[in-house]
Amino acid sequence: MRVKICGITSFEDAIATIDSGADALGFVFYEKSPRYITSTDAKKIINKLPPFIEKVGLFVNADIQTINDISKASGITLIQLHFEVSDKFCSQLELPYIKVVRAQSAEDIQKNAKEYRLVDAYCEAYGGAGKRLNLEWFKDIDCSKIILAGGLDASNVKECLPYGFYGVDVSSGVEASKGIKDTHKVKAFLNEVKC
Image (cartoon, rainbow, N blue to C red; front, side):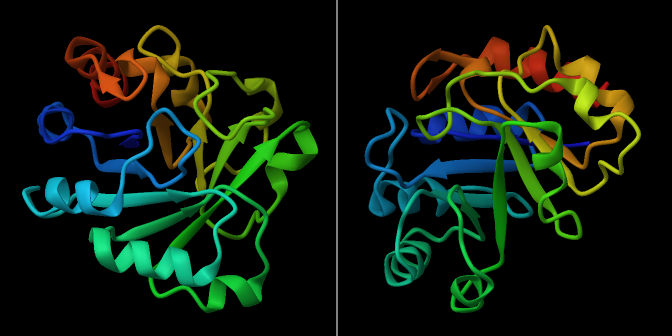
């Protein structure tokens, strides 16, 4: 199972996370988030990272030009769209992208079912609320293209393994404070998933 650690704001957190076994790092380009990072600061981190790590940029309610400009300036490799977008919108993006489904019901998790997608618990704010989804919703459906997010940490991520998710995404569950990762929590989380 792939693991993305989101809300990276420092090189120290990035490298500690990679050393613990993470497959992807998330950089939040949403100014209202406590985990917000500028494209310049993200680039400073990304430029020093080892190869074969996915660098994901999270965007909320941004226009195409802004997303493409920040993507280019920061050096990310994948765009994460945390808002409703059309196929036409997506066709104008200059990097591969993944859509986020903010699920309020069991029916919601089947949105974009033919695509790889990130499924998070719906909340008024965008991301990082630590709200968990009902795992019963995923019973008897194909989860091989779903990256599960929302309220995950080392104490509960093992419960997700039997469902066959493509990956899991965590932010607040491995933090010392908003935007600052706790190395012990990161290691504990990855040990539960990878061991």
